[in-house]
Image (cartoon, rainbow, N blue to C red):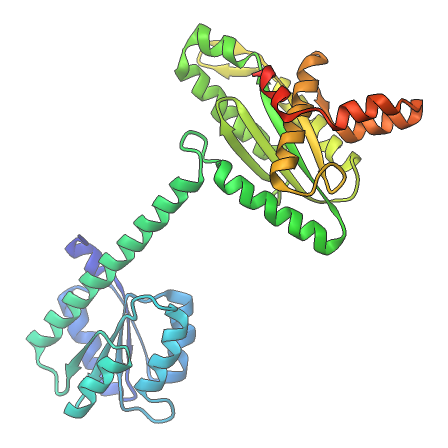
Length: 338
């Protein structure tokens, strides 16, 4: 539940065409201890102000020249988009009370003001509003947890697949390409077994940061689990546009890791698949990148491999059988490098 201090620190906007009414309401709120109160006599300013400040409570006079309170609430509904409309209507007309509630107001205060009623209704509405916001933030946090790796904070496989699909759609629309890079850490198991999982977790977090700092902001860096990561590159035009970033990642992860008084070293092997050259679906691209990762491991680790590069090499030497073997290898073979 929101604390009393949370309620007193809530953002409040007073809207009335009468300067005397605004002055009175501001004085009532200040004496009660509310610290963040603003006001306007211009109803057309309410929606822009709410977009900017996201008020916890709007004390809204219903009878104003130009836009009336009902028209203002209609605009506020478009901003809140089904959320909690934080309007407490101010009216001297008994017939307006029910109409205000039907229009979206959460409660009303009658004019002339009864001080006890004003304090109680404002407090109750702010309590509900802040609780609603807490629940919305909790729901958002739970959703984030469901889509992100708990240790590193990186997108997990569920979110990754959605990001890959988005990258493929964008590449298709713009007649460009996209790349999937599958990474596995060389030597991680030995570090984990020798120094324990706490050191292993620190390594994984440091690896995550190096991958992020070595990638573009628009790229997706994800953790699949264990010591496996994936980087998705969108809006590229050739294999070379993926090979450069892959080389950068190999170099970044070959640098020593300093944890407490230890200097630890490992490396990474990377498999690369290219859309649409290698495949056109998310699952196929992941499987091909996984097999290319196996090829990088088999070739000596601390490097990257890709079917596209193999095809280019095969074309130069006219080794068609080698090309076929490189691109048609069964996905299940990739599991052998684990």
